[in-house]
Amino acid sequence: SVSQRVSDGPDEESGLIGKLLFPCPPSSYTVDSFPRELIWVPKTMSPDTSGPEDCIPCLFLPYLSARFLIYFLHGNAEDLGRCYQFCSVLRDQFQVHVFVVEFPGYGVCPGSCSEPTLLDNAFAGFDFVRHVLKWPLDSIKIFGRSIGTGPALAIAEQYEISGLILVSPFTSIREVFRETIGFMAGFLAERFDNKRRIHKVRSPTLIVHGQRDLIIPHRHSQILFELCCSRKLLITPEDMEHNTNLLADVGYFVLPMLQFFSLPDYCFDAINVPDWAYDKRLSHMYQGPKPYRQATLSAPLALPEGEHPDVFLTARGVPSPGDSPAAELPPESDVSMEDAHATMLTSPDDMNYEPPSTPKRMLVDPWHGVAVDSVCEDFQFFV
Picture 1: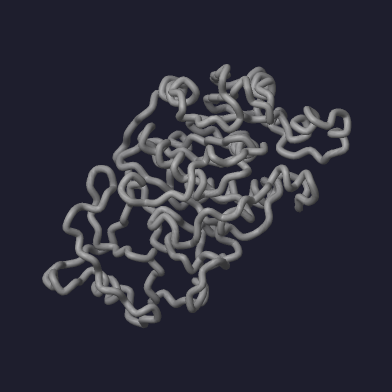
Picture 2: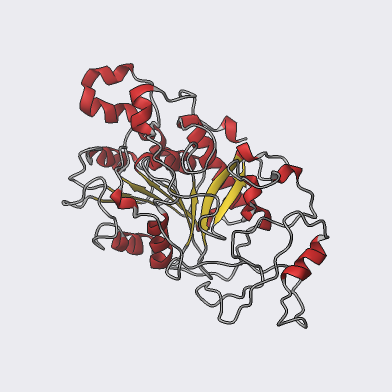
């Protein structure tokens, strides 16, 4: 189980250390943000056995016919909204699916963040990719930035994946604090002991760390690189800082990714997200009439505002022209799923339209109207 794989570190982070590790910025998104891209992942992998307090908000940005999926773990001063634009560019630049898991207490995710709870979320999201999306390990690349390199290495230690990407990693949290408080760091409980884990990684590993990083000195990456026993590459740009935009210079990140991992690559296997994952009733922030677990199977899904399932996709996942809006169902409709589906697919202008056996999913391209609150590099990464 997930709980058996997490660290034995402190259950709760408190005081100055906790605030530095997990500053939890104000949420930059809501349950209504990112239609058909914001999903909820139950820790049990089933919406019928998990309450809203056990469901993790995640972003899933698919790319048509992509072979690889990048599993992204963001920095500690970000949330899903703040890293959305970067992840959208990541998807289009490398032509990959992108999956982002939220940290406990960040954004609209329930809980409070500590090493065990963060690892709990990270492994749950990874299990969702493997067992629900059914994406194979040899097509998954894990990408951690800053504090996100901790859970990234924890997963890569246990699973042989297609690749591991570490940006501004650290050897351990204790060693990071040793840079500023000296020998007193020895009194701190150890967290995210990356130097102990990396020698167990069997996957190709790309490490990127700026030489002008004043928060985590780039010597941390040099130590991890030396300890890594798999195929590896270390990139240390001279003018790159801790918060530098990775896309500002192709030599920082884009070219090493393309050359080291031979991206992009394609396959024709469909990646299917279950409809229940989009249901906002799985969120503890949902303000509707009743939570998911109290809803019957005949109740319609709480689709994001303005969406309807009768949308066909172009090659880039953008709704094709001429798609007509669907008739709305009453929120508490007690019709059967078959009738509900037929009603949602019928409008006054296409009464003769025969609905398919399953609803089609709407994939929204970020360059066609999805608003982003802010760019991730405008925010401070502490670790």
